[in-house]
Length: 271
Length: 308
Image (cartoon, rainbow over all chains, first blue to last red; front, side, top):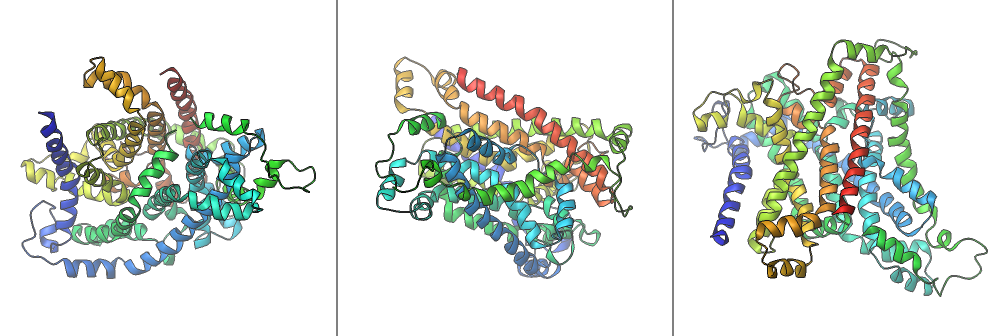
């Protein structure tokens, strides 16, 4: 009974829970405005995905948003990974009270909420308010804890002998880090990449405080503007065209790194 | 398990090939020098710790877009938000939101993990399907559910009803936390799956030999072995959802009648009005509430892991 019941239940759940909202987004993004005012699950009577997506690109300033998002998210992810890996290596291998304290402090960001209002004050004093470097610094500071936590757990499980063998061959710390530790970290790097990308790619809260409106707005901020503008209040077709385009990069990243992400979570989070 | 790794590592014999001629520097300082960790520590301290420390000062000032200089004003900001009732309401709303969202996210995640536990191609495909909502931004998720639950929306048109789903001051918060749970259930599922993978096969075998049914096996073998996954999932879900913003902003914007106005929604609104110090006061309260919830939670769940 359960042998056939279980797959049936899975398909039913997936269809209802994930299929229905997704379907709604996709069909609405292909409807003309008159049909989309009252969102429903019907197929469009008149298909016009092309012009909807073109409108979303034009009115939502999507290309500029995409560029702004990339210019902020990519450097943040790279910094989080590189700085995090270096710190995790030291935290995983050295044993002293000071190291334990530094580690505890650095992963405190997993629990503590970022003080978003005073970040704005600090950035103003540093001349970084409303700038990309300011946004990158804030994201990096915020998500370092995640990568350090995952990576430290992972490195602790890597046998020390690998490093020692290289050391006998005369390798210096930097060489050992770059040639042995970093390549072994690949699965957890995939996990950390997708986690940080997920948060930073879709963030509007911190971007609102740090970047504000203006020239440097990221994709989610633009989506927020499109959706909340009075003019577009019932422009579900444009909102969802925007949503589809904005979500595609994340889905692509996940599909590419899927295997590694799962193994990284397995070895990093659950010990 | 992390602890055992540390302990065995400590017992290792000194590396035979330790470089000569490095003076009296301890081995660790040569092999794993601090300067690898320094950049991360500096950035984290500068852009995370320092703002959090400043957050203990600015709430006691009159910092706003209406003053050119910042002066100390004592508890004024706190008495303002306490007197107009927003303080208590925001605390209550945020805690309720966090507990419900964490419960839904973990409940859905655990059920999905148990349903999709075996490593078949069918299951791998549907794991990816249930992970899809995690990949879609919370803001987009919020809009999708607004279109579903609107009075003119898809759910009412399918059911042939006319229910204002997002208009109840009592039930809307439950619906919004359900959406939150829906968005993040895929992540919990993955972590529970990882935990289930760690249950030794011979342990399940032994349970079956002893005549334990699926329920008995779950409660006596699987569930105790899942303790670390539960710790991680419950902690991150609870603390993460206290920091929620996008889903609430996209579905209700804090309404109806401020019944879903969590801390971050309040800060967003008040900051937009230029009342920086007041928003900062709320941010300090959020910090203190998170600490007050997180410490007993982590300590309690860790102790539970030891007992099980």
